[in-house]
Image (cartoon, rainbow, N blue to C red; front, top):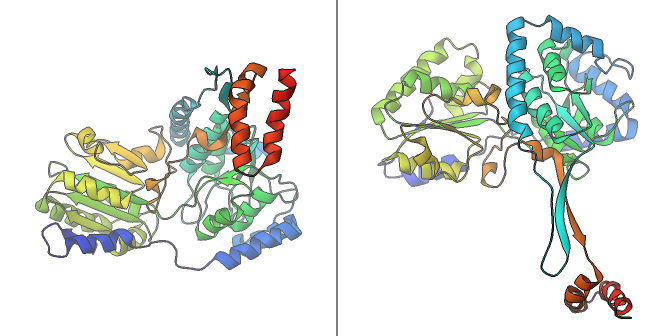
Length: 433
């Protein structure tokens, strides 16, 4: 049974604080195991990769067959169900259109002192994408991670995907083909992250690694950060729904379970100002779980991590949401824009009664790779910008240096850095001749 809280209970504030502060990350301590895997891959290269693939995925690979060849990818795209292909292509087109317009523009200007200033944006040379293959395979994540990289202008995109038993997932391969992935490797786990970061055998290192994974993958991304960039170290999925009593409780229940079915550590939270509606949603969840294909996973997430919270007003609910800073926030109310104005922290907003979070997971256009575990307080979701770097520009004429150089040299003296001051004053002396 999910936690039930009501605004007029005596300990509401403390009970909500405890709920908001609870940790749902995998409790297993994987740090040392991951560190050992990364060190082994760095020391032994592809030999280590092959050993871990045999051990964890149950099949043998070599440097010659670890890469999925172009013919196999093209065949996967040809052979998948026609309706699935059409859906993937529609999703890809919408995701591409949204991320293409995120590309920022360069800028250059001359200020009043005569300095030329500005910035320019350039893509990383290579990016690595991890596509999970554990409890479920996610071709939608392939599109969401690969297409922004291509929109940014990344020249090489390599994807690693575990293949338990050596069986490729044709829909994942089809998604990679549609998204323009350059290389697909049959490698998973922390060893895949190590290979992407440092290279191994035929695998060249990349500059940025993105994509979801289990606790070992997340920890590996944490440990290689600095050597490469990463999108985030993601935690369990989460959804918050603010809904009034005019909604269909069956629909809201389905929305909550849409995230609960990801993982037993997922979290689903309903805020409402209508106690009777809260009861109706709770009953609808119980009814749906009775026949849910992923009832064991969704039921555990609902029972252990989730909540129904009745507030005095919907505006109160919006303020409480800021403490959770959720990955996904649905505003299933009559005037969602007014309520959205009160929300400061959320990875993605879904406005109105007809915009379920699942729409955003697949083909609305915005990215579904979003900050979790409260990171929406300071972070944003994956975007075209994830694969771009901003380089600033400074240029100066002799006249501009005469105007601003003396002050810069003075600041260098104040910091005890005479070499900095000299690099400016020598030019000032030469320019005065």
